[in-house]
Length: 115
Length: 119
Image (cartoon, rainbow over all chains, first blue to last red; front, side, top):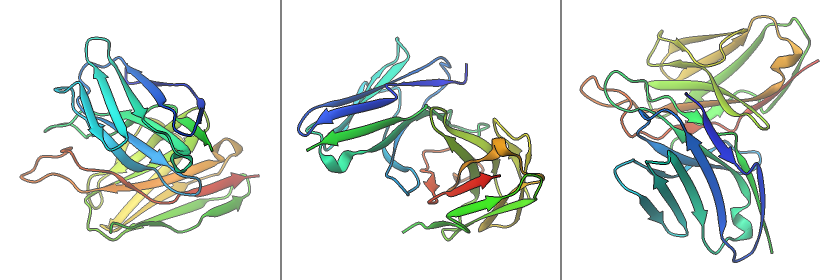
C-alpha cells in the first residue's frame, strides 16, 4: 500500500511535443505529491509538487494533473525541449504532525527529447 | 544555495569490506536521508535521521547502519559489503518544521550521489 507505480519506464518525444508521465498510488493518506528531475551525474531536484486539494498545478511548461478519486497523478511537459531530457521521479508522502514526511518514490521515467 | 556533498563520486570495494559513505550539508538542516537508486526501482529509503544521534530505519535497512554525531554530517556504513549492494547511493537533507511539527512542505535537497561497486 506504500507503493507508487510510475509509467512509462522510458519515453522518447520530439522537440515541441508533449511528454506525459503517469503515477498511481494506493494509500489514501498520502497528501503531498512532488516530482523530482534528475540530470545525468546529478542528484534529483524538486521540479513541482501538488497537494490533493487541487486538481492541477502549473509552473511554466510543467503541469501536474491530480485525480484523487482514481488515485493517480501525472506530469505533463508542454513544448518539450532537448534540455528536458532527464529522469523524472514521482513521489508521495504523508505530512503533518506525527508523520515523518518520508518520500515514497516511483520507479522513474527516462525522458529523451529529440531535436 | 543549499549544498549537499558526498565524499566520493565513485567507489570500488571488495566483498566483505567495511564501507563508509559520508554526506555533509551546509544548511543546518535537521533531517537527513540515505537512499539507494537502482534502475527500474527508483529511489528507496535506507535510513533517515531526524536530528543528531537520532535515526530511523527506512524501507531497506538490512546490511546498513548509520551514524549522525554532528548535525551537518550523516554517514552510511556497510558493515560487510556484498555484491548486491552495488548501487548509486544518494544522500539528502531537509529542514524540519517549526513548533515541534515535522514533515511540513519542506524540499529534500540531494547530493550528487556515490556510485559504489562491490566486487
